[in-house]
Length: 265
Ligand code: G1P
Image (tube, rainbow, N blue to C red):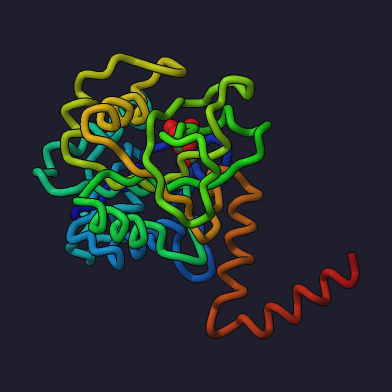
């Protein structure tokens, strides 16, 4: 299995800091968020990690320079997640492709590893990591339509019938959102190459995944950990607190500090 991390976005929501530091390099403790994601891919078994960057984000390249299993591919122009993924197709053969979105940090479990386990137990099928989101927020995500109408217990894998990218609330087939982790058959690249622009005028990974799901079947799996959206300020602050609470050097001190802060609110 090889991994791919799209990290080419411009980070305009984080200006001014992103004029010099890519948002994926913002520190969570003493390490950039992106390195925590690279580590997740490695410990899930990825032998090579390709990071998609754009011009102006060379700091990422410099940071990982000594790590031989990390490679880089450029995306020119912001034409969507599917377009970003497609830029790396030349680096992949017929092995499984693990995609970890550079702005989704998952703590409390190795989401990629648990998806790889589900895939191995189901003849190498494609697996999409998901999380439940409040109904009013479904239009921000790819939303899954499970094959069975039955309630799905947390942590259970389920067969996927379809995925709808950013549906209006009344058309959402469930509250299970695609959450930034995908383990896909290599044929995804061929389906992506055939895609016209979809929602938002962008080449959508979701549209190619729908074809893959129809052709080969696909499985969804809810995370047991928590995903932090590094695409917004609140998400970054939450991730910093969570990582600090688990940090071997500072966790006790930090817990006491948080209690003190809470008492004075
Ligand atoms: C992307 C995907 C979407 C997914 C979301 C969160 O959307 O297209 O299916 O639910 O990431 O992982 P974006 O946040 O890039 O608009």
